[in-house]
Image 1 (tube, rainbow, N blue to C red):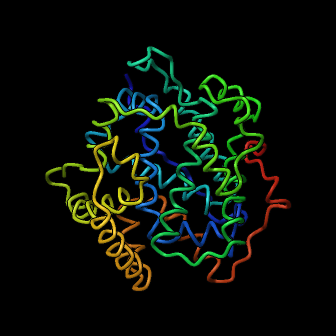
Image 2 (image 1 turned 30 degrees about the horizontal axis):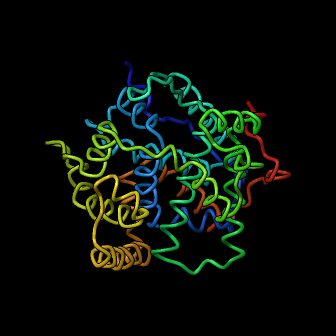
Length: 332
């Protein structure tokens, strides 16, 4: 098996930002995804994605180098989503084309059921997007808070804009959902655009939740990575990684932690989250988060920093004529 899922996700950035992207300065997505809470949020999404179906764990086992490079998965996931949130629309289109090329080659057979899997499965792609987008929101909500109801609504509306850039036909999503056993009366009419809609679709998919040996191996490697000798950069990251992982775990629904063997007491959870609030606040307040992000996800750091500097300096790039209708695939 080729490790296509772990190939570097390289993009060539234009010399100048061509527009302010899907959302732009002042958007709730910029506000949330630029905060240090994004890291434990993404780690939370890892765990949920691994247990949401056995296919995710099988794909990771057969097409990934996660054991040798556990930090690489965090890096690439953050790189992709920071690109979608902060890059101009041409770069968003390039990122999605690159993602499709990698995912098109990730196919195989899930060992428990013998069913074929594909990383291009429409319903599972929707689920992966939802888990990532919601997990970052949830981490921000628990560690920072303060979003108004209107801001929360805008955040989830912006999630739909981001997902639609993948160009997945909604009828294909519904057909895929049927194949995964989603009841007809619970099939998504549209892409979920509220927190309540996310909860409903997660509830409709609960029968897919499964933990097997592949799941446990993947979670152990990602949540408890072993440092590589001689790599000073990774050694530095490994010093802060356990605290980030503990925070991500504390944000996971308790019933999921029980079946994955990650359960901790409410007292421990409270202590972890209190500490995480202090740490993420300090990272944001003291301006040290960019250094951590640069070490963890250098390409994502570059994209986010360019966007934030452009906004700070009052640079006004060309805005898409209708951000809600932007389809980067049309720009290919």
